[in-house]
Length: 380
Ligand code: OSB
Ligand code: MG
Image 1 (cartoon, rainbow, N blue to C red):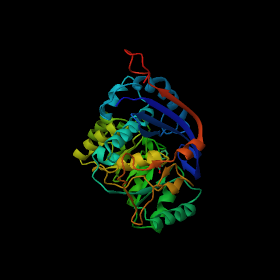
Image 2: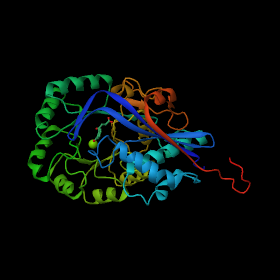
Image 3: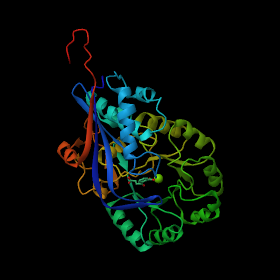
Image 4: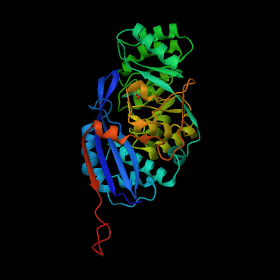
């Protein structure tokens, strides 16, 4: 398929409430959407970069620049047989995985639509329904966290993840465990601790956590291996893993026993699939992480979560948890058993609400391939 046009749009979407992590708080998302077009078929992707470079080094603005100045020129007018080719096409660009993923994933959606099959099926997914968990931002006090958790459990979510940071950790974990002795509970530190905190983190072992996510530096693997050797609680890496070779390094070093896969962080569906395959062969469970995505990113996460290695509930929750009104139709809903039923319609399986996207757009730019038929001079 020849990439005939690429359209970038930045939309602003207000979260229902602020989301706080160890690296900051966010109330309104600035989301970059990518739409690709070929022979009348279109596909959608979402750059999952944050507003500031605090989760990783990318931001909405850097993503806009990297897409317009470097990614689009490499792909516009190219014939792509299979979206698997895209990482090689973009290999000269170092890093910027979220920007690359936004484009690559849009092509996956478009190709699935052209073939008339769901993206989940095109990726090789095997699940018709995926297990869901929720990620809860840091609260003022344990009491507020407990009431938020009761609500989520009532909705059916299968596991609870709480964000923690130094000073807002043990007392929160202990309160949650006392109130809910049997739930699947995990914590995410987003790199808020140092290896010297190991004796403190060791105390978490008393609470039967399913894992502790990314306790140490965002760019470290080795110290996580040292930490994992001291803990009974499995370590799960998030920020540190951007590709297959870092995955291998982490698992060979025993830096983690579980892996969070985020499509943006690893550069798109192709690499995500390879990481899933490798982890499955090593018997390392994986799950799908979230980045407060709009419906488009969420739909890609759902498709990825159908791969067989995604055996743990992911941070893939209902549209209504984050947005008053999503940009896709139908919205993502969660069943009372805490699952999402994977759509079977072609591509991502949800319709993008163009009128709503247009109303939320603050800037957009379209790039069109130049006409191909030079010999006749006819512009096609
Ligand atoms: O570390 O998983 C994370 C949100 C923004 C940045 C990083 C993370 C998160 C979440 C939210 O935990 C997951 C979601 O989208 O529900
Ligand atoms: Mg995380």
